Image 1 (cartoon, rainbow over the protein chains, first blue to last red):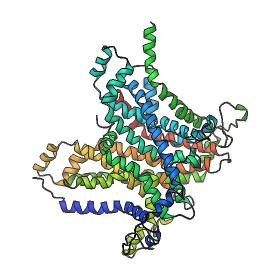
Image 2 (tube, chains in turn brown, orange):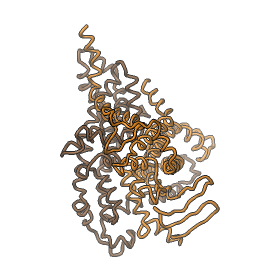
Image 3 (cartoon, one colour):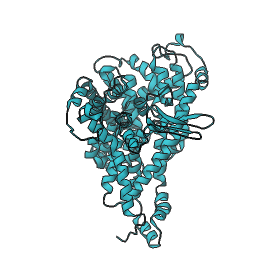
Image 4 (spheres, rainbow over the protein chains, first blue to last red):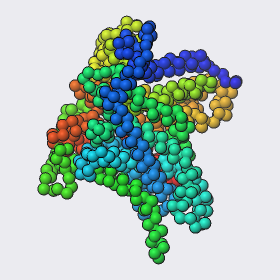
Length: 279
Length: 323
C-alpha cells in the first residue's frame, strides 16, 4: 500500500459519489414514478412525506395500455431471433474459422461491413419486401419475417464474435478429431461447440439486449398486434395525453429483462464485449 | 473425384442458412435501396425490379432534390452536432470515470456497476427516463436548478442564448455565423450519453486491468505523481481501446434515431431532426407521398459516409480476422 495518493482518495470518492448520484437520478425517477400515485409525483418524487406505494400503474400499463401483448411480442421476437442468429451464425462462423473455400474473403468482408453500415440501408425496401413475401399480415408470419430480418442483420456480429471464440479452440483438437475420421459436423458439434459454449452464451446475451432494445425495425415493419414493447412505450410517450405514471411502469417492464440478464450473467456479458479486442 | 467434389461443397453447406438469410434480408434490401434511389416511388406503390413497366427513372433526381432541400441540411447540421459532441464527450467522460474508479480500489465494483448498468437500458427507455427528469413541472432537473434560483433563468452572452426550464423545447441557441445551433440538441444527446457511457467504462476498465502494474509502480517509485502516471502511462496504453470506443460512438451518433424519436420526435419544428428521423419521415410518415426515392437516396448517402468514415476500423477488424 505504498501508493502515494496525491490526487487524494477523498477527492476521488467525492467526485465519483456525486456523479453516481447524478447517474442514478433517472433510475430513481422512473422507479418512484412507477410505484407511487401520480398525485404524489406531481409534488416531486423526492418528496417522501406521506408517500404511499401502489401497483396500479403496472396494472394499467399491462392491461389498458396493452403492454401485456407487447411484452409477449418482444419475448417471441427476441427469443426466436437470438436462437436463429446463434444457430445460423455458429455454423457460418465455423466455416469461416476452420475451412478454406472460394469467396471466403469477399463473404467475410460483406458480413463484417454490416456491423458498420446503418440499418437504414435496408429499412425502406424491407416494408414492400415484407408484403411481397406475405410477412405483413397473419398471426405468426410477421414474427417470422422479423426473426429473419434480425437474423440477417445480426449475422455480421455473430460471425465476427463467434468466429473469435471458435478460433481460440486449439487447432490440434479439431485436427485430431478429423484424423480420427470425424466429419466437420461432428467436429463442430462434439469439439468446437462445447468448448466455445461460454462465448456462445456471451454472444446470445448481447444479441438478446440488441434485439430486445430495437425500436426502428419494429416501428417500421410491424403492425399494432405484433409490435414489440419498445414501440409500445414510444407510442405512449408521444401520445398527446402522456401518462407519465403508466409510461414509467412500462419503461421498467422494458428495462428489467436485459438488466436481470446482465446482472445474472455479468461474467459472460463483459467477456463477449471483448471478443474482438482481447484474444 | 466425387469425394473431392463433396468435400468442396461442405463449407457451403455450413454457410447455406446464413447466406440465405443474409441474401434475402440484407443484401437484397440493401441493393434495392441503392437501385430504387434512382427512381420515383412510394411505399404504397413500391419500386420493384420485376416490373419495368412502372419504373419512373429519375437518374440523380432524388439526390439532387435531397441535396437542394434545406430540411436535409438542417438534419445534417443536427447530425453533425451529434457527431462532434457525442463521441468526444462520451469517450472522454467514460475514460475519466474508468480511471477514477480504477484508483478507488475498494469501492470500484459499486461505482463501476452504477456507470455500466445503464448500458442495458434501451435508448427508447433512456429517452423516457430522461423525459421525466426534464419535465418542467415535476422533473428533478428543474427542481435542482430551482434550488439555486435559476429555474426559468435566461443568459445572453454574445452568440450564446441560454434558456433554463423548458428542457426539451427551448434551451436557447448558439449562433455560429453560418448557422444557429439549437441547444435542445444537447439535452437530447444527454440520455444517449448517460446510457452509452457504460460501454466506454467497460472497455477502458478492461484496458486498465491489462495494464502492467510494475510499470505503474516503477513510475511512482521514480517520483511521478498520480496525474503524470495517468497522462504518460495509463492513457497511452489505452489508446487502442479509445479508438474502438470512439468508432462505436461515431457509428451510433451517425445513425441515431431512438432517443430523438421518444424525447422530441425531431421537434420543436425541426430543431432536433437528425438524418435518420428525416429519412424515416420521407418514406414512412405518409405512405402515399412518392418521396421514398428521396429516403433511399438519404440512406445511401448516410451509409456511404459511414463506410468511408469507419473504413480504417473495418480494415483493422479484417486484418485481425486474417491473422
